[in-house]
Length: 212
Ligand code: SAM
Image (cartoon, rainbow, N blue to C red; front, side, top):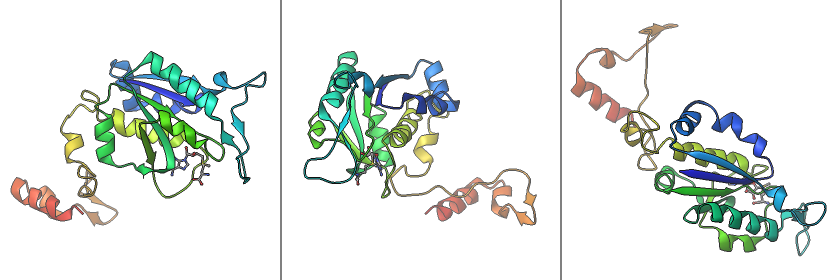
């Protein structure tokens, strides 16, 4: 999967994408991360990417010309890619969306900044997602969340291919049962007896009961 990220701050990404499973996925050739610096598409000598909102109001908005030019460049690299916009106006991002995106051959993720973007860019967007009811300073962290949740679902990334099917939110709702590892007793707290019993049916029943 080719993942292209349109951002004013490409330097935010490597710490996340070049670590652990996300790096391994790249190392195995299962995913490729490319950064497109929105500033390169800025207008004029000063490479302007933002302007004040019509109708007044605080802050600046991303202008449509640089954003659309950057999307078009990314589309030239990968015409089939899905174009994603993180935005509080989008549908809530949930596990089933991550699963659907993991089947795409390519993603282009646009990361707005400032007070947002000119709404006309949405004509070039396939999916708009909100990652929750709070406001962040830019689309980079939502982009990383989307990338992390998608890449781990690409076959070959996790190793145990069934693990993504039995973990939390497989149905967008249910949360996995609590888990324990050694030691059997830690600061007076014991591992539930049933998990030490070796009785797989009982363990299965306990786990089902503990899911919420
Ligand atoms: N003025 C906007 C509003 O009130 O909805 C907030 C803009 S926010 C400061 C800048 C950008 O960060 C947004 O355009 C979006 O790309 C991203 N962002 C912030 N919070 C987000 C969220 N909960 N989900 C997805 N993207 C978010």
